[in-house]
Amino acid sequence: MLAGLVALVGCLVEVGPSWACSAGAVTVATAFSWALAVRTGGRPIVVGGLALVLGLVAVISDDDALRTGAAVLTCVVSAVFAVMATVPAVRFVAAVREVLVAIVLAGIGALATVGFEPVVQVDRFEYATLGLALLGVFALVYRLGAGLHGLGRRGIVIVLIGTGVLALTLAYAELLRRYGTPGLVTSLLDVVVWSRHHLGAFPRPIETVLGVPALAWGVHMRARRRQGWWVCAFGVAATVPVAHSLVNPTVTLTESVLSVTYGAVVGLVIGFVVIRLDLAFTGPRGRRGRRAEEAGALRPEPGRTRALL
Image (cartoon, rainbow, N blue to C red; front, side):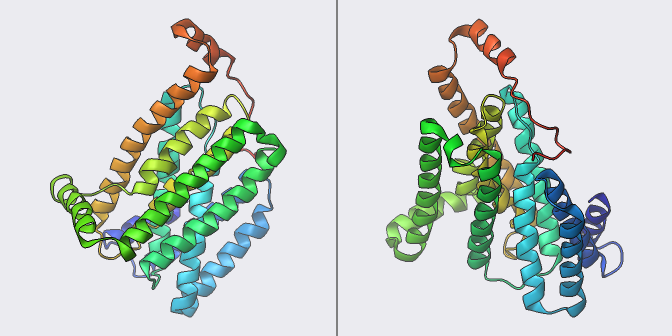
């Protein structure tokens, strides 16, 4: 992964050979595929070898469709792996660390995704990667979370709320883009323009409202109960936008980094509020009660580099 990252950064700053982008993209895609297979108890040699072959075929053929397909798969694998690479967090400070780990891994995936030089329609690429990542992460979480019977009443409510927020965010954005009144669209665009002009970027709503809060709350809950994996699954709403943040040619690298940063900061604030509300309703009251609850939050889970299954 580090070798691929060095090649991609060199390509980004226009230092090194012309094939550095493709080589770095294939290397990172292979490394992430291998790591995801290891983390989820799969067959790393088979999965990593397949990713390597597909990446080389796409690069050597120099076919736009194959390069774009490789970029889609790299984006999806990076986003899912970023969520799977997190570990339980007993305290909120540790939850912040895990969110940052996921964002950094997804950011490396973003460099690899654009390293394949895909030819895309941005909206279709974003929807396709988000949909595939959700399917992949829920398939894995189904095993990690002991199936649907491991959800419980509380878990079902959480999943329904997360699904509702995801659907409303996507539907609202699409309806606004297609059928919104000119006045409403202009007002919202004025906010975006002001933020870009004065702050340098505007945070992505799906990352800010759903992805980062879900990931922070999910890793916090995983230290206490297995249901936290179902909450973490919605963390791909944060890692997918990061992983395809560089695909849009109209957005600069600086703006992409600032957008992700602002979304993470605001999302962590929302996550902190959600965690405190959760503890207020389910945990003991008072500072001593909170410390006692944290001391007892010791649900075992394998380390970051070990298989979860």
